[in-house]
Length: 151
Image (cartoon, rainbow, N blue to C red; front, side, top):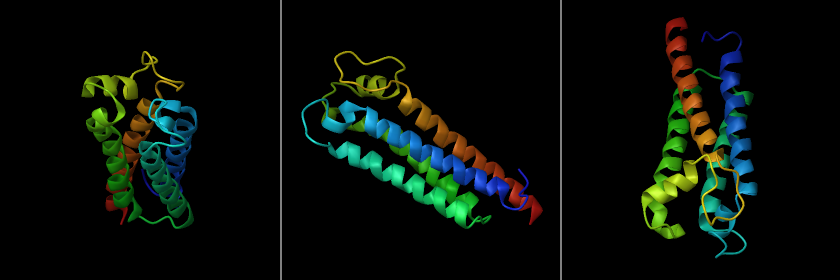
């Protein structure tokens, strides 16, 4: 992943912006996340947590696109893996959202079919976001490794 004029670094910026867009799709399509499965109005605290992760991805993407720099590979790798871990660690909060077991909440978050009894949402979006964070992490690691050879 040799850096030719910052193109590879900018690609990572674009991927972070796609992370942001996918997060927005979740925020605006998942009625369960918005209302704690119909209990809270207008927005449940978990909605704001995911909004913050989306804003982090947006800010990171903009910074990378405006000021591409080799140092960003390490920052991007750390940031993207932390965002992926945030998604997975959310499973530990299963009781706060009314699930009896972590497995049930994991099935809701990362299942590819609609969870029984839930409000409207698009199954698979959490999976896609998690996978995209892992791709972002891998791109950053490859860029960091490549930049280490060329500098």
